[in-house]
Image (tube, rainbow, N blue to C red):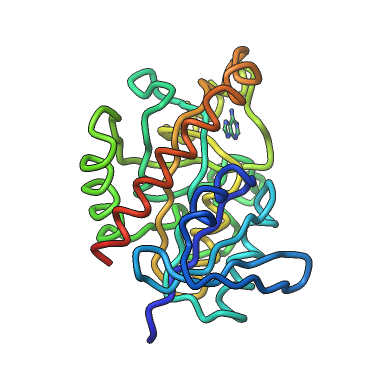
Length: 233
Ligand code: ADE
């Protein structure tokens, strides 16, 4: 299989820096999405902004698989921290992703389990996680990286009670709105997935205030890391 990496961010800021860095670039409109096709650090890449939320994320992965034949998918973006040790500015590399807003407990499934699905936590690719971690240490030496579970759902978490419920049920490192849908789509397409999330807020009462301030910084760190990582792909 030819190596073509898909990179998806939910928001413009999350993909802007990478679009700027792309060489041999062309844009392709497909459905209601714009895809940037070119090279990053010499590696064939397709970039897109998917929009916010699980359906946008999952569908954009599928579009990249069907239209461009991507062989791996990387999600970059921001997230709210759900762990006291993880601060604004730190980076979380997902070892797996779960849905915090799926529930069919009435049928005996545990919270987060998609009924009849053969996995609870959608896996990410360990090799890509290792490469991303090495790249981050190299280009962002002052930034701490963590490995662990990411929880996704169609909600911006900005209330203590909701945050605590997600922590208790899933014990994730951070919360965001797309990662699990991308890992799910990658799982069904049997391609490796990497989720890189820079912490923009603490998913509590201060979340709306912190988010815009730290989003831009986080985007710069993620982009630097991806460009470095692509040198060893
Ligand atoms: N992305 C960044 N911060 C978030 C939060 N608090 N909830 C959901 N998604 C986020």
